[in-house]
Length: 488
Image (cartoon, rainbow, N blue to C red; front, top):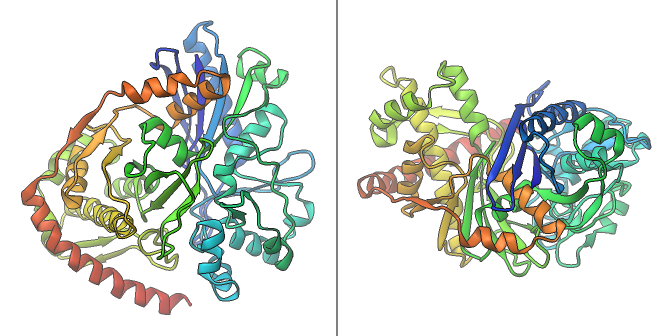
């Protein structure tokens, strides 16, 4: 059996998968995101570690003595943990959704130019990536003078498990400081901006980075000396779980935000620079991806705000009773800035055309529809760059908030395929553990025998959304113009 660990934005997840590719144990515990100021988003690395210990111990208890062969780790990306020479964190992790480096990202656009950076790194310049964030830290703190390594979230967990400092290509490429064609750090960026390159050595995602430390094995309650496979960022690991290995086979994952990704056989770049290109966890593979502005993070906040936190069946029914397009109500879901297709961190959440007749169910449907519009617009960007979807694999379960899946499929006018895993990302990490352990054939077996189901678009909804999408785009452009003037 193999253990996959996932440090997401919202929780720590552990999942054990056996040699028959069946989930054996799944445990999860929430983690906290602190937002001390507007635009800030931080997490405590020690909380990650303490929560992970609890999760693994719960799994070990459930396994009742059955042996784990290897472990791999995946995580949220773009966050930075600054550690000293002893591996101790020098503060909270500035996670991916933090936008405090907005002015620094605008500075990089003027100083280097977005096309120059995109052609090297495959990424649009944005405040969520490491380069502008390091500029902010250099300007506002003294942390860099004490730092031994910059670790992304997965890297920190790997260090705690093995005592080894490392990272992998799928995380290195999310920094705005890594050349995705030459597969090396861009030394002139560090030199020209007087930033020390303190990222750890890069190894393959499928390599064994080290072995579980004895004292950690005792804390976790598992066998000493287990091989730890390096792992990678959550998006490419999700592609592995979805079985999407060819260009045009998209995955859609609705976690904190909704991500759309497809595999590439070469580092193809895109003219508009709004589609990110990075490294896969599989060697000699890249991926093209774009994350829209919202997903479960804001949806869960909205449910709490409206007092309907744990009533998905009730939500499904009541939202289905609201007329499509919500009789003109528009919800711009940019509460943490705008990602694809807009890429403007200064945007804000906005309600437009709201009246006394609009209930909380209208608000929920308007949110679902706005996210669906942004998915549609993002897929259109791929189409403009000659990547047409041949399959969209949704990593959510089909029966969870089914009305939302129907809205998305109808808005996009394309069927949605479901693999119906309870938690796909940690499952993908377990597949990576198998691969690193030498069981590569099991991944091909998984892709061949996936249990798939499907939702088809509804024609009557598709017609409505074709018209309402135009209105949504006009409204967003007006809002973006306003927020840009207010911010810059």
